[in-house]
Amino acid sequence: MAERIMLVDDEREIVAFMRDALEDEGYEVLCAYGGEEALQLLPQKPDVVVLDVMMPGMDGYALCEAIRERASCPILFVSARRSEEDRVRGLMAGGDDYLVKPFGLREFKTRIYAHLRREKRERAGADRFLRFGVLAIDAKGRELKIGDQDVPMTAREFDILLLLALHPSQVFAREDIYERIWGLEADGDSATVTEHIKKIRAKLAAIDPELNPIGTVWGVGYKWQI
Image (cartoon, rainbow, N blue to C red; front, side):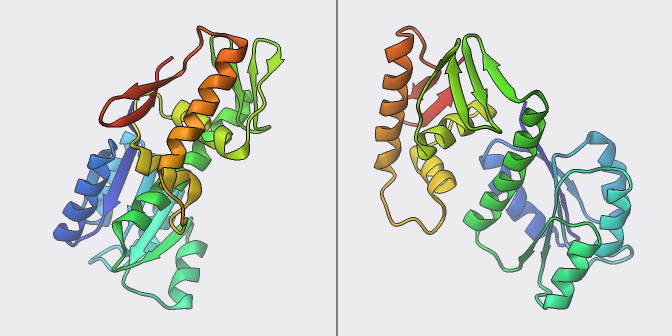
């Protein structure tokens, strides 16, 4: 099931800009243009709320406090107000992050992804393991097992495996995996993703030749397939 993002901003052009970017990533998007409308949509249980500060009627700070009384999902402020006082006020109101307008799409999408990843890791930690037949991923302990046998993984290999396993219905382009795992400022080449996936497959096949959880979607990228 696609993650659900709620956008709250009275500027409809900005909402449309963010909505299109998120829908391109496969997210489900809820749009609200004011505080009361956002509260009416809250029962649909968004996984992340993206919230403007300066809105008529209920401002973003008051809305954030109201949301916090009802939900624990991450809240990302996006605002043209850039002072330290504004950022601190947003965080004190219950926000988890603060992004200053204008912002780049890559940074915006990466911050959304980072909050979703943290939430999924915390939920996975309650059970500790993600299980796919004989394959068990310990997200908290960063260990991988096939049956009772440990599978040695480098940090990057494990991060790629966990990214795909946490999003089993999503296809990731090689460039997208590189950006999410190596970061926005990395100087390398996304071709390294292909090499890392080859190594992951080889390590798994050395223990169970029939186990191939990472599928190739030709011309697009990779996805979790078990």
